[in-house]
Length: 456
Image (cartoon, rainbow, N blue to C red; front, side):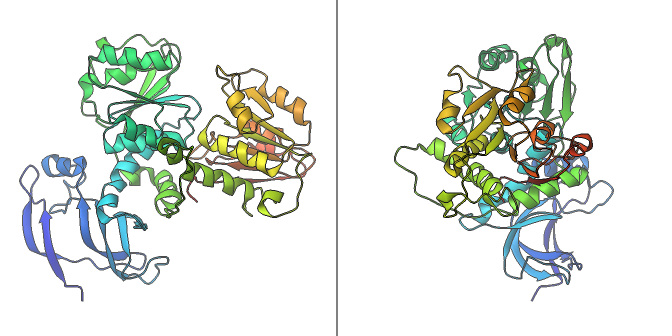
């Protein structure tokens, strides 16, 4: 039996201590809502700002701070599906998911605000994977999520300042830099890795005085972007090195309702889709290597072999289709998901496995080891012409592991353009994006397009 009132810590006046009340009303669920008995509440910096400055709540006092909760469902509205009384869930208003097996209520209490802040920081600025990204504050929760999202977005170099190197590399960081030193010393360490090519920086911890680290690490000749979680004041622009192409500063507030489309899509495909899968780590695979396997391998496998994807039916899965005379095109072969796609394509028996990637010092040998038969430098001016010379008008399968537009918009033009115009082809992507209507009109036999979250 749910009581009509409850204990609660409330803000009664801005700038004053919280007040304990014993008669706060217990809200009743609407038709599309669930009622949760809170077990754990995860306070965040914005809760402190709500108490001290009235952020979000100034016009609605008294108010209960704390958005991130974990608890047990005690009642469900008449129109609710997918949730039942007794289930443990976590999230915040309009964004809830079941607590997965193997996770404690404490584990998931810190997820919602931290992960959604990072999603907003990454994908409002719409970074494209394949290059380098800088994460400042790798030891923070948002920094750790930033590393993992950078892996999912397909970044080739993930440079992190601060935090435990072993832990961060297990999440996917390629370089971890000691945070101690002056801003100029830190920038020098970063530039030793990225040169003048850095276009994206995510600053989770620095106040305005030291946010120049992220800015000065950006390219001096191409326009870069910094997303910061502490937009609490102006920076000393006299300390910013010259940027001939300029730069952008994105002020990030973890309010998913301001970015409802993006956050709802991420939550439904990632947090609400969490599952528990386990396997023994082979003796020749390190912990760091194994940490990148599940999401990336599942995403590529689903895109190639599910009935809603390419629906390939190769012999190694017990079917009988021979793909020896077929070609497959993989954009982003250097990404983790791209590498798995190369290996799955080889297992499927494709005669031509063509990929675009940044050709590194080994001349692409590592990608050939994964199964690529042809590697096209993604920075070449004639990428499409090179691939067209290999496939003609016969390409039926294109998989884009890195490009897309999380907030909608035209994308995947190269992959779509290369699909056959006279036979129905298939395009699978890991990030959504609308097909270019001009290119789509040239596909007289039509085409099939599917976008896959890496955790479906």
